[in-house]
Image 1 (cartoon, rainbow, N blue to C red):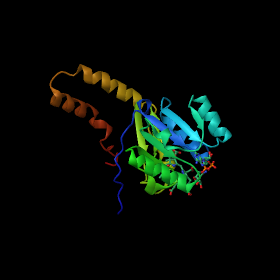
Image 2: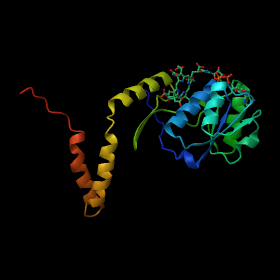
Image 3: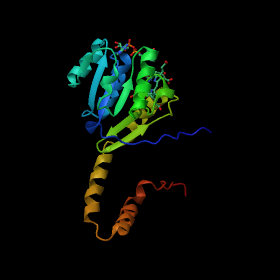
Image 4: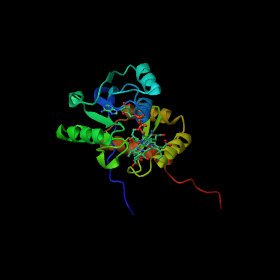
Length: 197
Ligand SMILES: C[C@@]1(CC(=O)O)C2=NC(=C\c3[nH]c(c(CCC(=O)O)c3CC(=O)O)Cc3[nH]c(c(CC(=O)O)c3CCC(=O)O)/C=C3\N/C(=C\2)[C@@H](CCC(=O)O)[C@]3(C)CC(=O)O)/[C@H]1CCC(=O)O
Ligand SMILES: NC(=O)c1ccc[n+]([C@@H]2O[C@H](COP(=O)([O-])OP(=O)(O)OC[C@H]3O[C@@H](n4cnc5c(N)ncnc54)[C@H](O)[C@@H]3O)[C@@H](O)[C@H]2O)c1
C-alpha cells in the first residue's frame, strides 16, 4: 500500500511572511482556508488582476495587494509562497525562484511543484487536526475535515484546559508527571466494554 510520508508541522504564520501570487479563484480558496485557520497570518499578494471576491476578502483582512506581474523582488523577506496564477510558465518560474532562495513553495494546481501541501483543517479551541491525502484527493481531505468537525466534541478544549491546569499541580519529576497524566487520561482511549454478558 502507498503511504503518506509527509511530515506535518504547525506553523506560527503570524510570524512568517507569506506571499500569494495570483488574485483569482484559487488564490481566494487558499486565502480563505489560510485565514479560517490562522486569522493572524502575515500575508501579502501580488497579481495582475484581482477577482472581486478575492479582493473583498483580502481587503477585509487587511492584506496588502500589489497589482503587478510577478517579479522575483516580491520574494524578498518571504518564508512561504503560494503560486496560483493561470500561467504555467509563471508558476514554474516562481517555483524555481523560490528553490534558488530556499523559500518553501506551493504551486496550488501542481503537486510535483509543492514543497508542502495545504491540508484540510479542523479547529476546536486549542485543538487542531490537519488532514492530507498526499496530494491525491483534495475532495477526500475536505470530506474528512467535515467528518472530524462533526465528531470531535465541542468541549474537547475543556479537557485540554483542565489537563493543562492539572499538570501544573502534579508533584514529582518529569517521569512521574507523565505517568500520572497517562493514568488519568487512560479512559479516553480504552475500548468501551460491551454489555453482551
Ligand atoms: C484540502 C484543501 C486545503 C486548501 O485548499 O487550503 C486542498 N484542496 C482543497 C479543495 C479542493 N481543491 C480542488 C478541489 C476540486 C476537486 C478535485 O480536483 O479533487 C477541491 C474540493 C472542493 O473544492 O470541493 C482542486 C485541486 N486541488 C489540487 C489540485 C491539483 C491536483 O490534484 O493535481 C486540484 C485539481 C486541479 C485540476 O483539476 O486541474 C491540489 C491541492 N489541493 C490541496 C489542498 C493540496 C493537497 C491536499 C491533500 O494532500 O489532500 C494540493 C496538492 C496543493 C495545495 O493546494 O496545497 C481544500 C479543502 C479545504 C476544505 O474544505 O477543508
Ligand atoms: N478555479 C479552480 O477551482 C481551479 C481548479 C483547478 C485548477 N485550476 C487551475 O488553477 C489556475 C488558476 O485558476 P483560477 O481559477 O484561480 O484562475 P483565475 O483566472 O481566477 O486567476 C488567475 C490569476 O492569476 C493572475 N496572473 C496571471 N498572470 C500573472 C502574472 N504574471 N503575475 C501575477 N499574477 C498573474 C491573474 O491576474 C489572475 O488573478 C488555472 O491554471 C486553472 O486551470 C483552477
